[in-house]
Image (cartoon, rainbow, N blue to C red; front, side):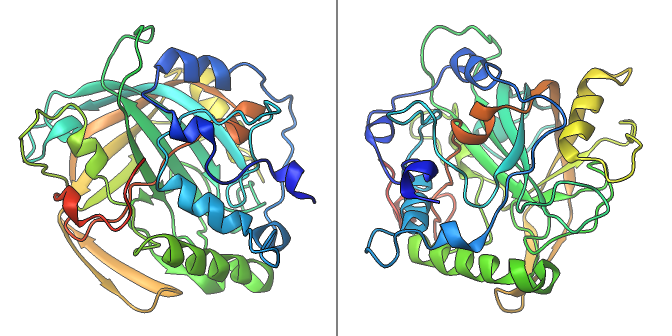
Length: 340
């Protein structure tokens, strides 16, 4: 695979000039070119991760630095073909509503009564997409501070990143998956072929930012916050499918088919997650075998999706930023990496 097939992984003009996002524009982009079934499974292999390393233009490192500096929502590239995701190539995009129904001690869109639109991408870390196989399901999302899907002007947004055990999990359906901003890491679950990918990823993320396995959620706590108001963000975020959601049957079912069935074939005609937070937890063990004990989870709201699509633009064009690590999650001045 040559560099042109990867697309431009590093910073480009689209990243530098980004000045807010329109829900309708991103939604229309990801729904524009859906895949046909059966869905292709795109490989996640070690070779592309080292592309350009010997030429002192390491594509993987460039991509990693870009996602913690750029807020860009769509990265089309000069050929309008976007870029290849090196770690999560297989995904499905969803649109819906973020709503905080309980009173909380937090600020911004973690505050009780907050309600906004959301565009998310549900994916798996590796080539494997089917239940019955080791995989690590993940969800990233972008929250918009509006309930009007046709809001005419670009808005600031907030992103979140959640995942199962980064090494891999054995969940048999999306109903069983527990998605956290601070997941465990079990490298042995990746096997001989997947472990080098995970180790390389850890090295690159450490070179880019301080903490490779936790993604802070202060962006949500700062979305819609009044100037001068202190940031009050939870330490931990957890997303789990609500109990009333049916389980879709099927042996070796692709998670993309599972999500499409939840949204379009069940009586609920939607897929809903509980939004849970906690400020109590401990981390134990080295990075390749890390365990987190998190207690006092509290449900504060719901994340409900009513539309979904597996598409070319959803895999290659839509972009979600990673919040730079802060020594104090509530203090912007403690960030190691500055945003554009």
